[in-house]
Amino acid sequence: MKRHDFTYAELAALLKRDGDYATADSLMTRVNRGTFTFAFFIQVVTAMGGDAVHLAHLRRARDEKERRRER
Image (cartoon, rainbow, N blue to C red; front, side, top):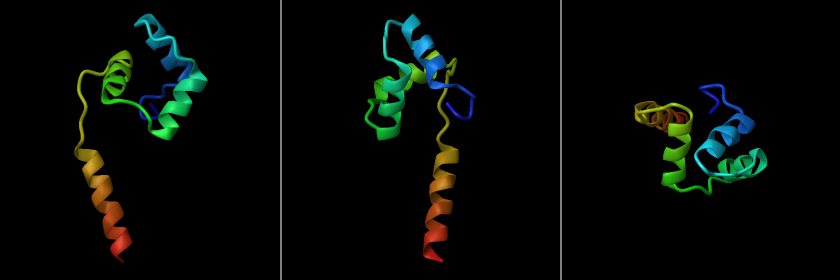
C-alpha cells in the first residue's frame, strides 16, 4: 500500500466495490497484526490494480537484514 500510495480509506472503498465491507480501521488492524489470509492479500493486490506479485525484493531485504545482524 505504501509503495503505491494507497490509504486505508481508499483501500476500503476499493474493496467495497468487490463486496467486502471492511472499514479503514478494521483494515488497518488486520494489516498491522498480520492476521490476514493469502486470499485477502490477493484481493487487496487486485483491488489496487496489481496483476503480479514480485518477491525478489523481499528476499534481498531479508538477506540484507540477516547480514546486518551477523555483524
